Length: 180
Image 1 (cartoon, one colour):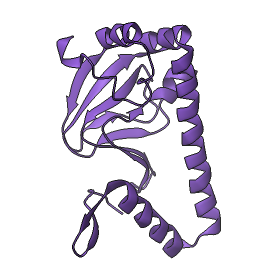
Image 2 (cartoon, helix red, strand yellow; image 1 turned 30 degrees about the horizontal axis):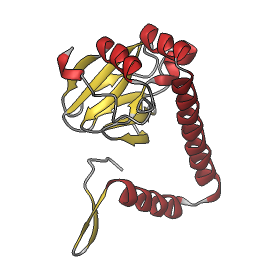
Image 3 (cartoon, rainbow, N blue to C red; image 1 turned 90 degrees about the horizontal axis):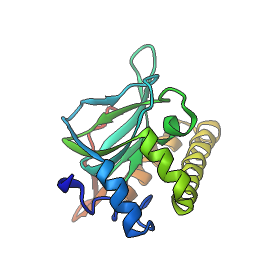
Image 4 (cartoon, one colour; image 1 turned 45 degrees about the horizontal axis):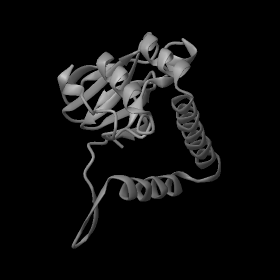
């Protein structure tokens, strides 16, 4: 697929792979666009693909029965998501929603698992990615236990400013469409 040639080189998960391995994976990629607010997948869906964000932003969220939303992560170009269900064969653990017009590269489960089997570097990278996500989850749990509401909000605003903020003359602006 010509539109995906070289697309994985800039993705941290894949950038250490050799050229033949990258070309083989890129030949298996599908390109898919999503509108703002479109659900990419729902919690409990079958996990049959890894997504790599090419353009746009995606939020990973949980919804309570009463409709309240908890945003677990905000992802940007180069980030990937959906790997948990690929690895363990279990259903999706959260929803993925396009926060703006988003273009993703999609790699099917069998192609992803075959790549892991043949590329120890990729297997190590996925372990690092999962370790990072587990550390983030531990930190979020710690925040819930040890900070009050005001402390959690202040900490989250500082994190969003650092990762998604734009420095202006009056300070840092976080221009994300968030509900909370």
